[in-house]
Length: 106
Image: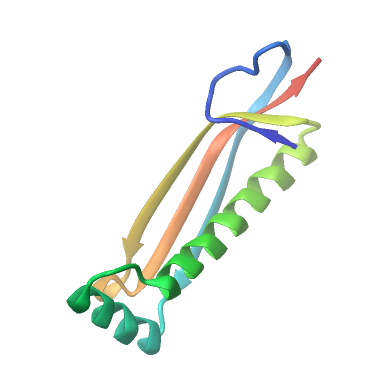
């Protein structure tokens, strides 16, 4: 399925606008990831554990919008917006929200 952050697809006409699709994934960060993330914060560098979790959440959210678009008869999603949030007590949960418009391209 074609996915884009732009409102249109160059060289392809949008035949039908099928509706807004939304995918969300909320993942908890366990104590070990928090511990290693804290160490990374102190000494600097990237936190691979958190990056992997965010990647998993993003993949789940995109799978959800693709499934919704297919169910509506779409073959593309335009105008995609990605949002990242930390939620829960003391920011213990990470959320990825992906939204866009399911369309049928000619």
